[in-house]
Length: 182
Ligand SMILES: Cc1cc2nc3c(=O)[nH]c(=O)nc-3n(C[C@H](O)[C@H](O)[C@H](O)COP(=O)(O)O)c2cc1C
Image 1 (tube, rainbow, N blue to C red):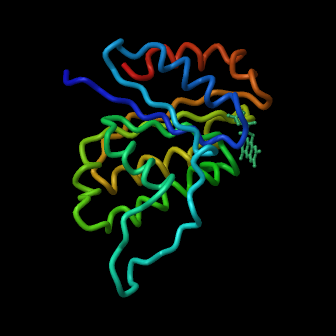
Image 2 (image 1 turned 120 degrees about the vertical axis):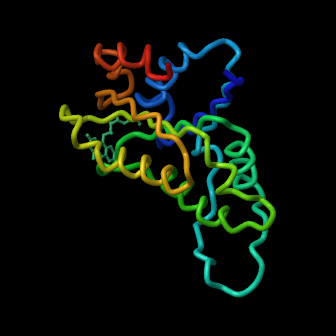
């Protein structure tokens, strides 16, 4: 298997939350030669997304945090969206990152869609609800968005918890984390 390179995008609005804890446990099982890059979307705030699809003029290359996130996204073979469940879907910073994909699709010379095709998209999420079915909107958002770009779908790893650390008591999630990326 070609060497894999995993980009973990952390979308919680707090540090050391359950989602990151669960994602790090799952990542412990990755092969030693798989690259791992961890970026917290809180540290890389993106500008408000502006829909310029039908505006006149050129699509300018991104700068600042957007450039960092675009470069990291394109460099990965595997993109892991680690967002807590917020109102049954992804967090605001995660949604904003996904909205920026729409702009990146139109950047001249980047071939964003072609370069995303063939990467694998994964989801990791923590939720307070004991019913995992309430995370279906998040899973659907990620799966179908990835499908739009021709990405493979790796699935979503769910863990239960409200306050930080709670997910460590979800033994079923800890078991699933051990094989999630295999
Ligand atoms: C704005 C907000 C919305 C939330 N919405 C949901 C929800 O829809 N369903 C749910 O089960 N938990 C919801 N929660 C609880 C979080 O998903 C839960 O506390 C989770 O462990 C947070 O992950 P984190 O520790 O990685 O930040 C919400 C929390 C916040 C702050």
